[in-house]
Image (cartoon, rainbow, N blue to C red; front, side):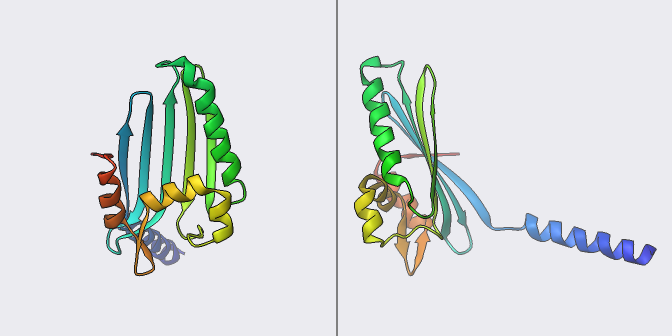
Length: 158
């Protein structure tokens, strides 16, 4: 019995070590404008230079200029309506007295980059994804994606 217990503990330790050595990394970038902030969070495998998930968070600060509150909310709701049913995409939206927020998660392994019908249905999403995710040799390359968004004046958060 003791031998089985020791072996089980040893195997559990090995599993924790293997999980702890995962090469999956997160990297965050921010673009701050006068009344909005956009965050991009990449989850990627350092060793393979491949992105597995992109999270985009768009935050409108409605305290800066209340005239744009309804326009920002309307624009967000249009984008949400376009995204309905797009495979590999989930979203959450939130409103409070100070901010209008939209968070979009793209599962790179499920998202269909070349689906013409989805591209036509959700042009805003596809334009954004094409700007933030760059493909090379059948993978989404973190390095190419990073280089591309830095050209749009995003700043890396350390």
